[in-house]
Image (tube, rainbow, N blue to C red; front, side):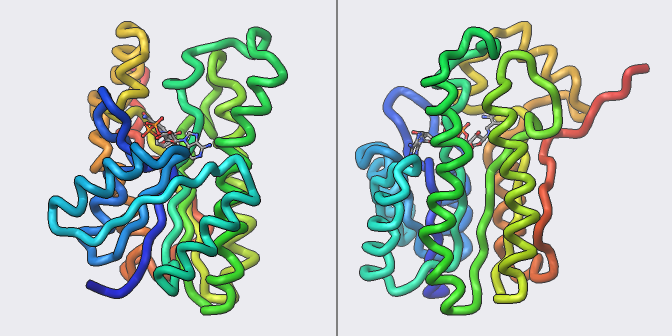
Length: 256
Ligand SMILES: NC(=O)c1ccc[n+]([C@@H]2O[C@H](COP(=O)([O-])OP(=O)(O)OC[C@H]3O[C@@H](n4cnc5c(N)ncnc54)[C@H](O)[C@@H]3O)[C@@H](O)[C@H]2O)c1
């Protein structure tokens, strides 16, 4: 063990679904020797992820943290610091994805639904980051990762609010990296294309096929292939990388 602690939001493993990207990231960080804290908005899915990691011999624990609630984030992060003494890595993977809303056009979304999306997918990352920053600033080290999406860069007529939130995370990454870089903290962002998760499993098949055809590699990613990039970014191998948003999307297919 390295003695370091990594917190991953939105990394729960829900019943009747394969685990998502958060779990894949938690597993790889555990393999690299970090003690991992698996979070989700409810304790049960977080426990399921943590149990599965412990069964593999890793040090893992679970915590419920509703990223949409800034006060709850502060209290839960303080509890983690009291229990573990340090947090070295925060990965902001929680989001309200397609699994929650399906594909919807902007004019079909109510103001309340719009607020809910922003509260989790954008403000959730701000809340969790704000909660860990005082500790990282005090220690003069730390790594923060945003999980954005290629929807940050690509227009998408039926995922507008999600895209807005993910685009904001790209700017947040660059701005926060500039702010905290001099204090020894790196901030980077990973932007997946399509991954084999419960989210894409819920997409209409023709749409999914078109998505896959638009990639140079002609296939979807395994969550582990996206997690690999997070693993690199938080490692010392990426010690001179900060403020970056990296697309992990299988490349773009040419038109001709
Ligand atoms: N699946 C894809 O193809 C894909 C593509 C691009 C980006 N992403 C991003 O990757 C990340 C993980 O996606 P996934 O496919 O595993 O999706 P997912 O929906 O399975 O994971 C998101 C997790 O966030 C949790 N969450 C929701 N509200 C929360 C809250 N208020 N507080 C804490 N946790 C909350 C959910 O319970 C869920 O476990 C997300 O940020 C998603 O936007 C996924």
